[in-house]
Amino acid sequence: DSGVTQTPKHLITATGQRVTLRCSPRSGDLSVYWYQQSLDQGLQFLIQYYNGEERAKGNILERFSAQQFPDLHSELNLSSLELGDSALYFCASSVDGGGGNTIYFGEGSWLTVV
Amino acid sequence: AQSVTQLGSHVSVSEGALVLLRCNYSSSVPPYLFWYVQYPNQGLQLLLKYTSAATLVKGINGFEAEFKKSETSFHLTKPSAHMSDAAEYFCAVIKSGSARQLTFGSGTQLTVLP
Image (cartoon, rainbow over all chains, first blue to last red; front, side, top):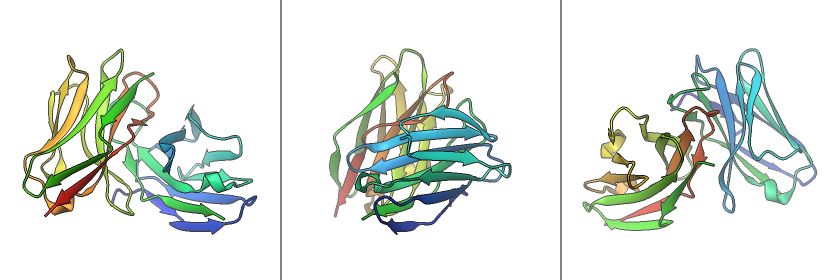
């Protein structure tokens, strides 16, 4: 158990809909990351937050947004869903945003868009 | 941009045989390098990491990796494969000094044959 908690574990929704994925980082970790894992794209970095502020942006679509709340939990919002958004979405956390500290991953949220 | 290349998307070994999973990185500055393992239907678990302290890094479950700057490699090895090692393995890099985005390789699926 990495200590990173993601909900829901599985989600099936229709095209055009909007979903929210939730992540609780490890206790004491200030930095949260979101990754997408799909068969064709592999593991792709989406976005990073550090203590409530956006730190870095990766290959995140405009239809997707995220935020980190004062209690440090984070949410990834996916809207106008398309079939191609079906993937495993990982949240990860680390103590801070620099150095060689370990980044710990949750077990992911499986999103299926039908 | 920093990246990693994993040679061989599928590797099969017999139980008890040497495991060798290859990873080469491209970076103009010393990177931080990681190996993660993903068991079926689970999240990513850190096996080991290189942060410039020692070139030979020992990880969990008997795995180790050696950082070779001259070869820009960070290959993962285990002297004797066990059936429980069957999983997908990912090499990842963070360029030192940058925002802490893990850039992953495409992964190597390890099969252990009885």
